[in-house]
Amino acid sequence: MKREIPLIITGVVGIVFIVQFFIPHEPFSSLSDIFSDWFSIIEACAIWLGALNLIKLSLDKLGKPMLLVTSAIVVVALIVGIVGAPDEFLAGRFPLILFAVAFLLMALGQYSRSKMKPDWFFALTTIASFVIMLIAGLAFSGGRTFQEPGTHYDYLYRSVYTPLSSTMFAMLAFFVASASYRAFRARNREAAMLLVAAFFVMAGRVPLAEFLGTLTPDAFSGAWATTGGFLSGAADWVMNFPNAAGQRAIMIGIALGIVSTSLRIILGIERSHIGGE
Amino acid sequence: MAKGTQGGFWQRLMAIDRRVIFLAVGIAVSAPFFLPISPKIHITPEVESLYNALKELPAGSKVLFPFDYDPPSAPELQPMAVAAITYCLENDLKMVIMGLWPQGPQQANLALASVIEGEVGDVITYNGKTFKYGIDWVNLGFQEGREFVIQRMGSSFAAAFPRDYRGTPVDELDLMRGVTNFNNVDFVFSLSSGYPGTIEWVQLAGDRFHARIGAGNTAVQAPMVYPYYRAGQLTGILGGMKGAAEFEVLVGVKGGFGTRAMLSQTFSHAIIIFFIIVGNIAFFVGGRPSRLKGTEEV
Image (cartoon, rainbow over all chains, first blue to last red; front, top):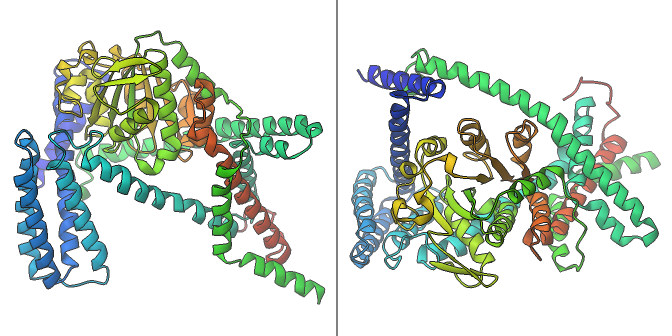
């Protein structure tokens, strides 16, 4: 039954979604709505599961003494959050209590197997960040929802999360430049074509020629403007024709693969997602 | 001897310390912010097409704004959001904001805050006009469920978003009273940097429920979205920071971040093109013989 019930659910839901796409009438439309709502509910639960799993893995890396100290601090912080939450914002207390119970259970469960790992500091930072954001969002939003402008959560989002995540992403520019220098070579005909296309897209998607025009005498400004128009046109052509054609081919290939895999899952032939072969 | 020296030079150039490249890119990205130059922005057809689609909307039209991105993509997408919100406020278009990404609704608030005078509250002021929350704009917040949320919105917005991000039931919001599904929304302006995002909006809201969609995407995602524009499933695309700068020019946003950062992006593209050219010269002159013969080497 452990396998049959998930297979039946998968099959029924899959068939209903396919049928309701072509026959958007009762009872398929209602069934589709019910299944969509359930999908959102399951996804929301999965977020909690993922977050708790992250905490559990982080607790594993702390070692016994630090796990005890961390747990004590986190529990005290959670109690402060639960007690300090404004009366009119009871909705924030419930998830805090739930998390406090789950955290205690995890800490007790992981105590015997926790060993200090070299990356313990990152694990500790993860736990601290999680708990701080949770308490700031759920307990100390001044009776408002946590995302509203001016809340502590909003402050942390704007002042800590945004610059940190932006920095991580911005560093890509440096590595892309370095990798392009070392690896982007016209080794063969295909690579040379890619290189030429990349040149036109990179030069045409920014006003490079127009900028060069500002550095040269006015007599050449017309020539630079023409060059800019040509580069921009070339970039547009690459994006609208070779790129669109290639993307379509990839999309059609992916779609066919999704259709065949989905049919295998719906019909119960593919069972690897429920632990089968 | 001379040839050996030349080969050695090119070999050394190929093995240049990556910190030199990092420094060059760092200067190329940051220096232009201090230069008093603003290059002319060439308007592409896909951006003009999106702007024209917005211009066709009469005052009072409802525009759905899915904010499907997070802070790392904000440099490209936030200027688009700012310009789009500016256009809506100037032309009395009603904004229904939502997010399939958890950070989306907050990015919307940040965009709104940078457009209006003062702070985002129940009443905001722009150009002397006042706009009320729940009447002129709403923020439905984030809903988990990815494309299934879009599917659910096709039958009932209220079922997908029973409450707004403040916890107010959507039935109590004047703007949402007449909005049952996509038939009651005049335009969808998808701002997205990945999954779920514009592609899901096109496939479900556009193809299934016949909503008119325009998109603002990161430069990385834009190439994947172009086939939908070519097929007419999207009214237009704002691709990356260049798209944002073009849209700012069309909307008339003065000193927008997209336009200001265009010179920085121009320099960074130029430096990468320069490095690629130098790397290839070094490869052919000093490193490897020409192999432009066919596909014998990958």
